[in-house]
Amino acid sequence: MRKRSQAVLIRLTDNEKNHLQRQAANAGLKMEPFIRKLIMGVDITPRPPDNIVNLIREVNYIGNNINQIAKKVNSENSVNQSQLEEIMRLLGEIYREVKN
Image (tube, rainbow, N blue to C red; front, side, top):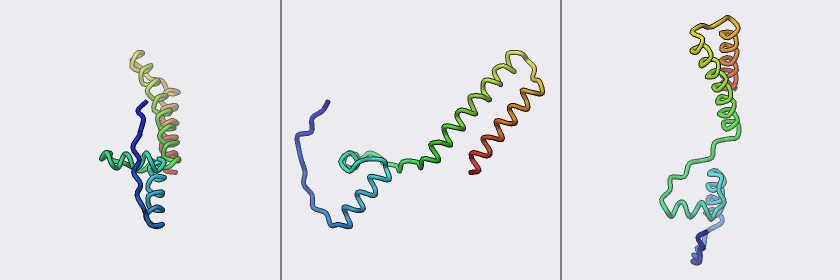
C-alpha cells in the first residue's frame, strides 16, 4: 500500500468547505479521496441514485431470464405459447420498472 507522507494545509471559507463536502458526497466519496482525484485530473461523476442502481440490477436480472429463454428457443428451433407469454411478462416487468 502506498503511504502518503505529504500533507497540504489549505484554508477555506465555510461556504467553500460546504461546497466541497457536497461535491464529495454527490460523488460518493469522502473529501480526501475526492480532492486527490481532482488533483490527478480524474473525471468525477455523481454517484447514480439508489433507485437507478436497483433498476439496473432488476433489468439485468430480467434480461438474463429473457436470454435463457432465447437460447432455449434457438436450440429447439421453435417457440411455444408459454415461452412467448413468459417473454411478454418479463418485458412488461422491464417497462414497469423503467416507468417508475
